[in-house]
Image (spheres, one colour):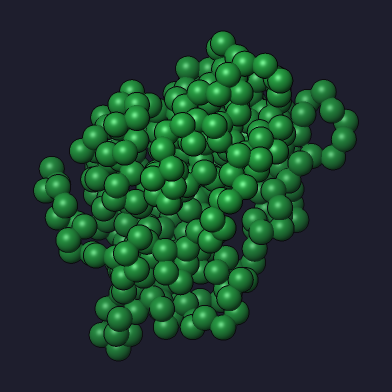
Length: 313
């Protein structure tokens, strides 16, 4: 059993909120309501009637884990209505109040589930308490991915926006000669999943949290979506017939079974080519994450086999 707060005190964040060099988008959500409505319009059914409700399920993480792919796939389900943009209510906009948050949501009719995704919730210290105070029975989904690959993907995204930042190798170490990993750098800190999960388990039982494998979401999207739909209490509507593997992108694209048009793939910001990272740095990162990964497997009761995956390379 972990001592509450122990990991958090051992690895404090360099940047306060887990952003820093590699953060979420910095847009202030100034057009939250109109943007949310535009995003929601892409869902399978878009009623002009119904009412706006607070969400009954949230995708809370992790950044660069596959949350956008999961959101787009679950939005195909006719019984799900989800915000297309990230509201960032429980981390950046909490002071605006629950009515503001409710107004961001799409309209739903009876039997439909309201959802949103904001991956930074998982690493926000205040988020579990705030979400619990809104709805203690809410369902939470976390998409996790090999933390080494996730960190490189995170860095790659920031590099595309800020080409002047230091190399991954420079940012990853406090002292490279001594091999000291800088766990306060958000790109690395986010991947210490056990650290963040400890905070959530103080407010929510494991039965209310579903952990989705980002790797399996790519190789077997229908299988992972079956688990998601079961967890949300939905009929298994989203199946293998909804996916088409894009060899160029390297991950599945969505298609409507009744539609003969081209499959809908995620935008150009997804599936970026990663820069080459020094193999020694990758090796040191794997060693750093290994005990935390094992702790995470024990906490969740799931073995994501990231070490086995690395051993195959």
